[in-house]
Image 1: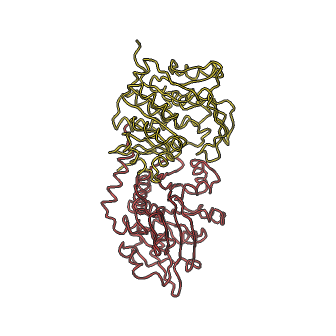
Image 2: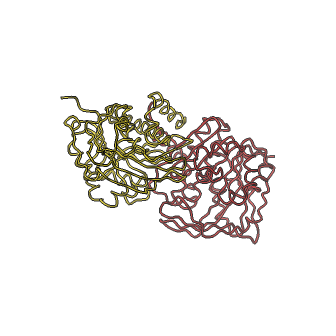
Image 3: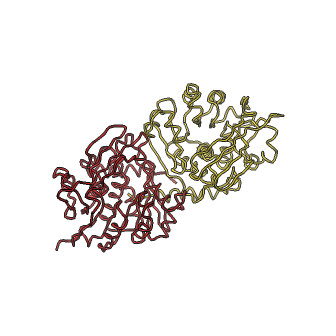
Length: 305
Length: 305
């Protein structure tokens, strides 16, 4: 039997239609698992657990293969249609407006994990139905499990969501969502409250304002990379999570020093992701560009005592 | 003749009425020059150029004297009423809603500077009418001049404001305001645009998201101090500016290392300011508390390469 993949992700692979103030694309490859796995692939081998339809072409699937993402857990439903999301952004680019969502093959998605995948030490549960996240979590004997979620699940399936949050090590979540989940407008208090529900780590994604990292004993925060042009924010949070988990799986350590670096690598990957539609920028990213931007983070946040 | 005061500030001294989700105060000492000077007084000697009415009592004025703020340029108009601001904050605490503004003695304010004040090396023009800011600026042969402004002047007296911006070294301004001033939704581009109008430095105050510092050649950013309870955000920006300019005047250097430290000291002072109404927290702040929080900033923003 082959050795376990270091990192596994379950979530959506989608065909998006996106309009931003700078352009529009009718058929933009997306979905949380896609942005996550392409991002993480720069750090470690990653396997994607997801479902697509016939309309997801071989050319589309090349996005995985060219980054050596393991697709043995990617189901293709014959006669089915891939998950579709239609959205647009205004000038501030901070919030997407969803115009249409078609679950398609995703509606009946039952994640089936290979034996190799079940032994992965690092697992990321991207934003899907919380009960589905838990089903995957229960199949994988991982050393470190992180998850994302969204306002829809917080509002519609709160009890299910809390159960899932209770069985993960880390929650990687948006600023507005952690406040909504905790019912607490102050971010610091909101994060502290969620830390009592199970996870030892909360990572808060703050978009153009950066990211923050909470444990019971420590706090770390970083501003975002100063981008002069954000072209398409779709997948920013997922590429952040991909960089975070990818670096962690590569380092194979979960201490504070590694975690802080992971937050920075997550921020680096998100900053590249938003420069173009889909994963276009990540697909031609060079490893030295990641190192360069990592060092830039050090440079622009450093001050002398 | 006595030696020049290291730092001088012109701006409002006010009696505010404030309502937050956590309480209300009918008679809260405020105004930009008050928050600024109390904050700056922890670093250097500061002189306040402002005007008050009879209703500003000796007890009120103690806020300056107990911090050794120089009041020789504080005018008291007999029979006049002090500037009044009535405002409230919602749960997110990010934006104040103004319920009432009474200019009172501030309507006819003509700043009169002592000969000592005119020789101050550091000058801060707090948020007042841009033509008035320029009148003060022209009287002071300062080495380093910074200014603040607000949306009202950006919208109502844009040409006057641009003239004033053209004769200062630094603009210390809110996130939303720098974007509005530049007519540019991207913060980085907005700041770069303002840098072509005169100032060599733009410091952007981002409230709970921290602060950013721009010059033509450098960029620095910091998250805010993680506060579990923000009680009253009034004066946060002015106490930030006070810490920034106070530390700068004390160091008497305007190099990059000093500037970055100034941004952190500004953030420290703002974080204390918002913990209670008015300057209540700053009035009993101890210098070692400033040092502690400065070191905390280092701790929670540090990561290893």
